[in-house]
Length: 174
Image 1 (tube, helix red, strand yellow):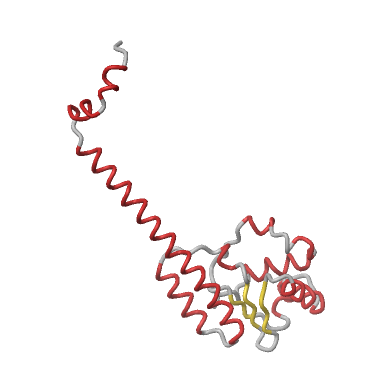
Image 2: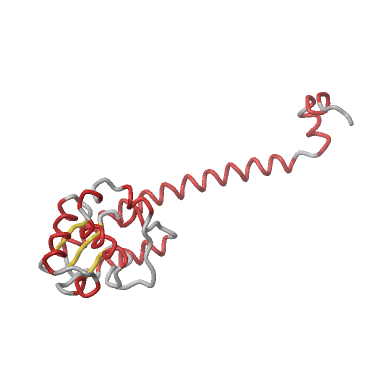
């Protein structure tokens, strides 16, 4: 469930829920986004001690930061199975293709926490619908551009001038 890189949007610094939580919560939130335990679906395996090994926080500070993040709705946390879902994961990790979604849903199925898997599935489903909408509007835009390009290519110099006589008559000669 690990990745080679992490993407975090600069929008994270404008999130009004995060700022008042303090430095520990911000550090933990960034850790969750960038941890080697974070999967492509935004699910994070976070057993006790793993985060505090990587972070300069005690177990108590870490737990307090996690509770704060959960309280403001930035994460969903299954304490029993030690899994976390980053609620705004798909804000930071944009879709690149249909295979990516397939991988995300397969990854979600591997998550042993039903609560976290359900949250991840909901968020991925919403993002998939938005992506499909973006794809259909992109296709429509490209079809319109292709139609216009074909229309322009069909015009020859003479019928272009005939179609636009004002261009020839109003352009001063040099």
